[in-house]
Length: 308
Image 1 (cartoon, rainbow, N blue to C red):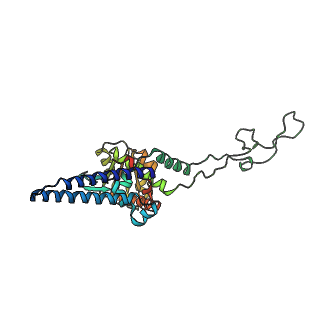
Image 2: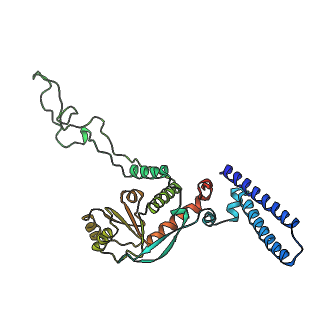
Image 3: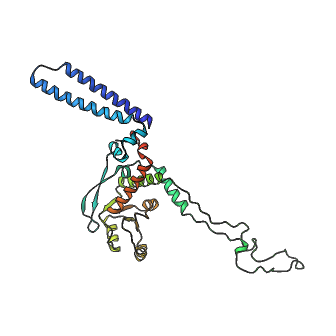
């Protein structure tokens, strides 16, 4: 990032030098007529304003990170200086009519869709939900410990009980124990993974924003799925209190899943073709990502060379 800022500083310095040169040339070539003087005064004022703006940009770029965060406490507003926000239509859940245009924060919906971060988030979720198969040892199997046959006199091999490892359905000598494969992941990595997924969904046209999912019905979810012509849809609502009967009924409809903003996870967002959020879930998810970004200073990870 330091190399990028240095290159931007050189570009700003060159632009300011060219403006100063043009100001001097205009001053030297100015005429004596009133109209010419007024026109030159207006152009000089515009040039001076541009020089002042370039000075402000150069001052910001030459700051150290600590000074930058001290002066600009809201780093997400500084993010808007370099990457413009996205916009999306908010639809009515009942008839799919457009209700208005909503501004999406660039930190969440205009991030760099990094595949490595998405992979790290999905791997972390898979490891946290991983379950090992239990292999019972001989002492844990049911049954008697009675000796099956005498030690001597039968001409056969010595044996104790039927739970021996070399018997069918016998116990394992070193049975595999279930253990926790989960590990902790940094919150800023998780937030960037969510941002990468939301950005990719929005760029591919697979993100829909609706007004409310509070009073939904199963036929309305099925109708919305048919309206957008998709095989699988994930609905995310910001309202809590889903009953168990509703969750059970949704399970009988393939291609439809309903989660809350507290239970939504990255793997479900990738498994479904379309992502539908109501406005409450959208604001909660965006606020969560922005709070983590404010805490971990995601402004330091801006990639200026990718900005268009």
